[in-house]
Amino acid sequence: MAPQKKGEDKAMGKVAIYPGSFDPITYGHLDIVERALEIFDKVIVAIADNAEKRPLFSIEERLQMAKIIFKDTPNVIVDSFKGLLVDYVAKTNAKVILRGLRATSDFEYEFHMASMNRSLNTHLDTLFMMTSKDYFFVSSRTIKEVAKLGGGVEGLVPDLVVRRLKEKFKLPVTKKKQIGWDD
Ligand code: PNS
Image 1 (tube, helix red, strand yellow):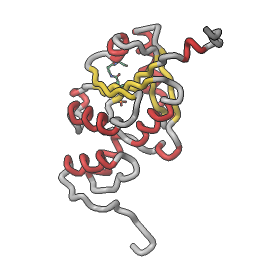
Image 2 (cartoon, protein in one colour; image 1 turned 90 degrees about the vertical axis):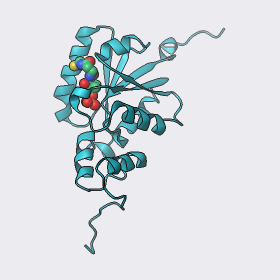
Image 3 (cartoon, protein in one colour; image 1 turned 180 degrees about the horizontal axis):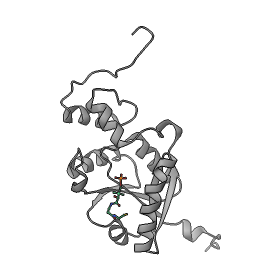
């Protein structure tokens, strides 16, 4: 058997949990997952079943959308969880919670959450990835607000999400609203 290189054992079977509300999932989320797959062998997209946050999309709808979106992405598992994130993570073999950071304004909330999770389970770490420049202004909250008011969110969320948002807000399926030189 070939001698194991230093760190090779650690690189095997690395799993990250990517938790969130994903209400709805955006290209910002997809970008984080794609880049995380360069580091981890498996990424579990863990959708919080958090009815108290009054999500636009039910847990079933969010799960279904994510499952369709990742159906051709090997090594991504889509799941949901209720209750404490650390309890969910403990049921997997993951040691890392993955979160995207868009701007310094995200930092305080994320810092508190990561610190709380670490205090609940000292074996877990939170890894932050900076959102790509193309998506740093994209959040599920603003996507919903823009979509509700009839603005175009194409290119910021997958087409399936665009359609589901239009269905939710009972908007006609039209082309992206763009302001051009001729307007
Ligand atoms: O996409 P979001 O809404 O920023 O994700 C937040 C989420 C779901 C990751 C967070 O609220 C969470 O982990 N909820 C589960 C309950 C929990 O464990 N709370 C303690 C962490 S401070």
